[in-house]
Structure formats: C-alpha cells, structure tokens
Amino acid sequence: MRIQRFVKLKEYEQIVYILRRHPLTFIPTAVLFIALLLIPVILYTLIRPVYGDFFSGPNVYPLMILGGSVYYLSIYLFFYAYFIDFYLDVWIITNDRIIDNEQHGLFHHTTTELELHNIQDVTSQTAGIIGTFFKFGDVTIKTSSVTTTIVFRQIPNPSKIRAELIKLADEDRKHHRTQK
Image (tube, rainbow, N blue to C red; front, top):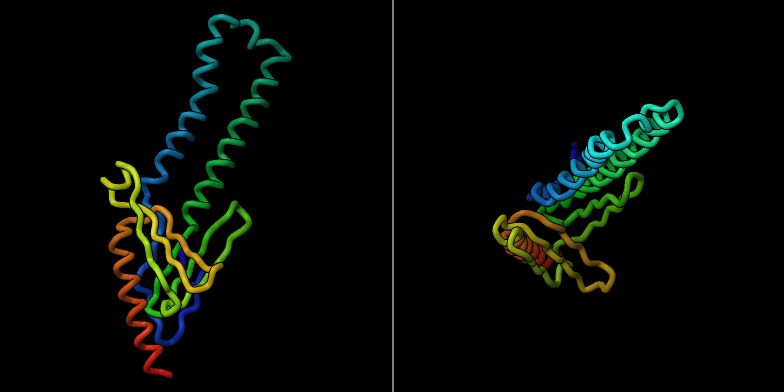
C-alpha cells in the first residue's frame, strides 16, 4: 500500500514510523473464520448417516446448496470486512505530526492529524499475558484540546513508541519556539 494515499508530506517532513496493529492480534479472527467454515462440513458428516435419504431429495438438496452458499458468502464477507479494518488502520508518525487513519467498515474511514508540539500526555498500556509476552499494546496520545485523543491500538513495542513520541514532541516544541 502506498502511504502517499494517506498523507502529503511537507518539504521538511520525514516519516519516522509507520505503525499497524500487531499481526498476532489477527489470529483469533482467522481461527474463528476457519471454525465457521468447518461447521457445515462437520454437521453434514454427522447428520448424513442418520438422515441420508432426506438430503438427496429433489427439494432439499437445492435448498441445502442455496443455504450453504449464503452461509459461506456471509462468512467471507464478514472476514473480508474485518481484514480490511485490520489492514487499513495505519498510524504515521513524522518529525512534525501524527496522522491517524482508521477504517470503520468497508466504506468509511477517518483521518486525523495532530501536530507533535500539541501533545500533552502520552501513555502506553500493555495488557494480558499474550500482550506482555509478545510486547504489543496501546498508546494513547492526548492534547490540550478535549476532543483530540489518538489511540494506537495493539501496536508492537508500545513503550518504545511512547518514549519516541515524547522525544519527537520535545524536539518539535523547541523547533516551534525558535521560529516564533
């Protein structure tokens, strides 16, 4: 994916980090997807020996094919929608600002920009055994504005990103003081 789709960099601006959710956080969805794909096959193999002639009837067989097709298409659609949400959530940190691009469903996304010198508080949080062991968690960025809070969800190395954001914000504040 091209980052230029999300952001137009200023002349002096450089990308420091491009953040996405940790790939491990997608595994429960993939396991659920595979389990949902296997349910009709398992049910069919369990029920067929008991009601074998019923499934081969001229009215039932087409209805089973139609029902199975609707079920599988629905599962694929929901998996695809979740994958798009997972893949297109991206946070870009430059030496001047943070760009938060979040996907909400298939046809809706929001982009929020935050100047680094406006950052008031940066908090990192790692929760659970898996998050601690694989070092992923959330980073919350707050500004003096009540409405602007950006959360990097389930990113790798949240403590490192928090420290780097604090450092970048301090450098950007110094840069803005010297320009005034």
